[in-house]
Image (cartoon, rainbow, N blue to C red; front, side):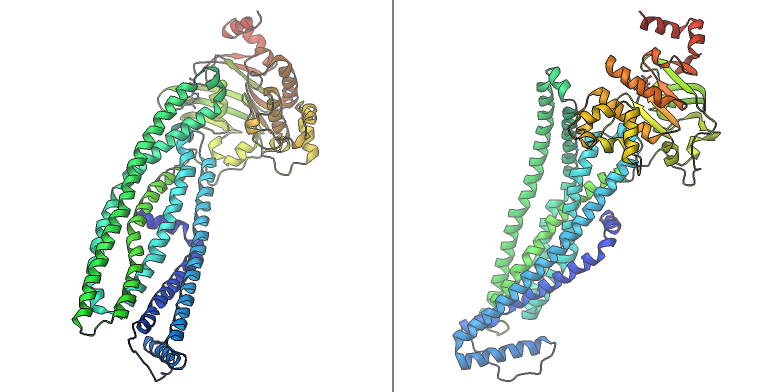
Length: 607
Ligand code: ADP
Ligand code: MG
């Protein structure tokens, strides 16, 4: 429960006014509810023809005595002037008004608490997304995507239920119980004391059932995440699944997980369903015992309790059962919600391993050089992917990386924008370690075009202007022209306003690539990183893209990972990567003259 309170303290404060309103409306609703119940007493007395006549009007005051007395006075008056039937009608009318007020305030209470819970849930949603965006790339390596999706959707829903329950637990049920109990004491102290002993006993038994459910709820959520993962994988790889006739296999995997979830969920829900009949049975038992005891009080004829009072008492007692009973369900969903909140916190509290220096240096742009000195890096702290890498890239020069796939080229370029932090050596820009700069500034001076261009399901215009604030339409068009993209964009149905489709699926590979180049052109970065930007293209688009790239590269500091050596012939320095080390370096001519690894690659591509 301590965790629960800390969660509440985190999210409730901005909505304290809604908490208070819910509280107040619930009090009003409980009071009106008791009032309309209490009005049953005179109604029943009239029906049973028990004379309870009051002939003197007391001065009005805020005391039950005065109110009750004067109410009876008016009932007596009406009875005498218009007859018992009329008195019954009036009393009934009062009951209706009382009930209407009760229902109205109870709706208002629900109305404000709905606002409260939706606000809290929205805040949590935003927090999760903000966190996901700031977490380093590496985090999503360790956490499966399905888990993250499940947390951002299913777990948030659990927390929502939990918030609803907590409103009932703290702002509603206690009020109802207190108000009803006071009313019951007012009617009969003896009977209430008697009932008082029974209720907690019944409550504890019911509460016990909900206890063991927390662990099971977690297992259920995990299975759910598993399903999400498979679904996501299958959707993004649907073409491959079909091409390899693997539908059956995927279905089998999914069915297996679905079966697991089904089993756990059945078990859990059945146990929860058990709570209802159990509590109903116990509730009835309690009522019967109370009826028996109350009945014997009346039959004794001691005059402590009239039949009408007893019936009204039972009415109130009946009302108290629900909030008392609700405790078990409420506790159950709070526990479930807190289990979900723990998973949400696993994301929210995940440390950002890429450490942002709070008073980082500003970085306006590259003035001198980029230096990799003795760099060593490993993804998993076990196998080194880069070992002892030393390179210097002076401003305005082009560094090209070639070599077998898996050699560490992509890793090398990913280190510069700090998608990962290195374990050994240092990477610096203009003499300062890149970790000393503001992360925003560091990334701001880079433009990246990768092999697999990332487009968002937005207009082409917005995809180009992505990450550049206040871009004008002229600038966007200029960028598109430089990237050889303008012509094909204009051929689209809606030109720049055409939607790119999910992940740019409505465009060809070459078109996507040219849009991502236009994005880099518009950004006009000091440092340009191209990671096999052309290797996925056919010859025709490659020519267009290559042309666009050479315009982009002109007079810029760049690191180019190339698959085809022809594209980097003019590089100022070429480094050959092999198993995480730079095994050869030099210009094209020097490397050919060395007659080593580069020469072999070159010969292979030219035959
Ligand atoms: P290249 O771009 O030269 O083909 P990479 O830099 O992509 O090579 O990969 C270098 C090595 O690092 C490979 O052995 C690869 O398996 C490993 N690797 C790449 N990315 C990751 C990652 N995110 N997690 C763990 N290992 C990785
Ligand atoms: Mg690569």
